[in-house]
Length: 462
Image (cartoon, rainbow, N blue to C red; front, side, top):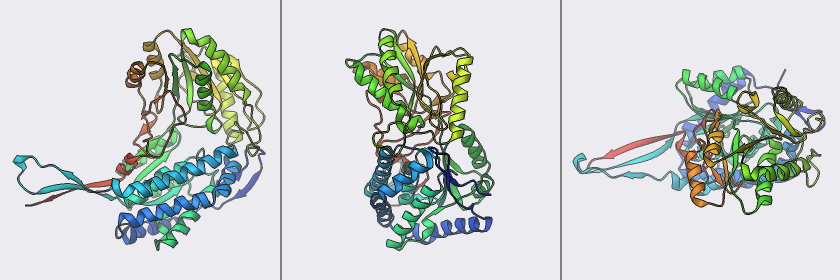
């Protein structure tokens, strides 16, 4: 029985199922990817590989409405946000189509006088076949930021998508096949695999596979990293987050509240780099808490296909039940519920917690859904201390009217990304990644092209 199925979280109805890949088909997929690497990616220039990714970008835009509707059905993303995700994925592919060749230009090395005459430089080339293990919360964007730069580098891709996203996975594979045919590239450049966890272990062990990128839970990341280490494979990990939103001063409390709500509700609250812990200076706390709670809870769950919906259902009934259990446990351990509502199937209304202490599970857990925790602090130093008192270190948000304080706090925060006085500012050129248990490595920007690449040093005699 296959785990790959589209179950609409808004209705609970299973709309379609997809067969898992057989062992023989998986063997052929790995061989196709390896042959595509040696027979096409290594033989053509970067301009040809960039042209392929440019076509992938355009095909996303050509099929924009169809692609967006797929992920609304698969994981409940509001339609307007789904359309935005397709656009962002296209922009990422286009960014690497436009900039990839420049990023891969030979890098001269200035020789020291005692090293003798001649020249030296770094030439960046692909490694081979890469395995991507992608999550359900951003079905197109996550694939774009992995596949786009790595195909331009010269690698080929095996892509295992989340079991609840088989239709979007098939749509992406069809786009790559279409684009490949237009530029006379083999279909093995990008292969979608509906694989089981046991089969993925086989893929990681295969000597033709040179690296693995996974976006997912800590548990999944740990399991993949262990396998990758056993087989001496490079791995990039983008895992969970419990990002702080620090408010130290503002000349527009309503704007700060609006940004805080947007940062928590994006993608139905199911974003690893969403603001989840709101750390507010004492003199601003009461007013912020009142206004934030009112604005946050005003966004009630609704039909994700309906115009203007900000909050759809969570990705599945299991996800909603898991979030409810976390919230109930936080209350049982002494947290104060400032506001909450009644779950209806996968529809989960916003909830606000206060008085969360270090003795509670909620202090260190990630809430993957529309639950916000409020923290009152007395100083900048205490704000940094609370922000860093977490096993995660993905993103962070700092709001202040003092530019020097903003950079001082940014320096003090243990996170891979700091956003000052803005939210939802991700862009194709900005590197994305974290530290601590949020993972390692970077995607997006030029740094994405540095992860799975051979930085080959070439020294030339005079």
